[in-house]
Amino acid sequence: MAQPGRDDNTSGVTLTDTNPTAAPGATAAGADEAKAKYPKGIVLGPDGKPLISCRTCTSSTFWASMGKTPKTKGSTATATAPSATNGLPADCPPDVERLGNSTWTLLHSIAATYPENPSPAQKDDLRGFMRTFSRLYPCWVCAEDFQSYIKKDEVRVEGRQEFGNWLCMAHNEVNRKLGKKEFDCSRWEERWRTGWKDGRCD
Image (cartoon, rainbow, N blue to C red; front, side, top):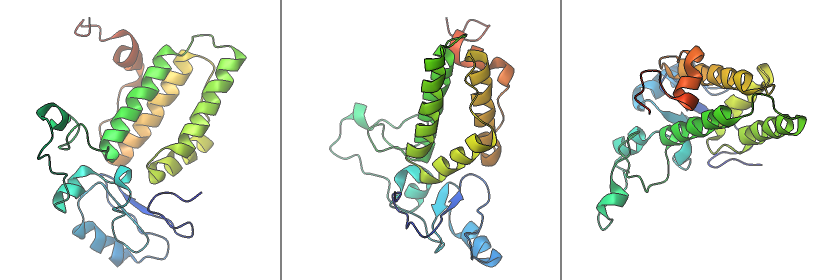
């Protein structure tokens, strides 16, 4: 099935918050040129140009730099208040950053409510959900990356602790690629299930 903004016979290049990598057949000089030309958070196609048709693959910083930030004229103040994750109004389609943050919130919340001793059916459900999720994720570059991760390190569905730790390690893998700080996985339950020990979530 074709992905948005992508030709089935080509492969894209992701420019997350790290350096871009060259598409198959592209030269190192071309990749260096792309680094200088576009801000971080851009997904480039094999032609070295941004995939502007894939909003969920592109950072809002790119849209802003291209003068494409949606105008808020005529919208209500509540609907157009910028979100905490980027400068876009909350009622705009998500960019790659907002989509990613929302997705991790959902996945970690699923881990937090997953049973300690799941039934065989619950294990199958989680395994199937993660497989399907990795194929349907709106950012196709991210989806392919997550599919590769699942092949390399299979989803652990034996219980809440195993799944929560596996998910935290998967999240840290993404954080490393983006040049972000890694999370201490020994504290995932405090962050996503019980609340911090200092009581600030009570």
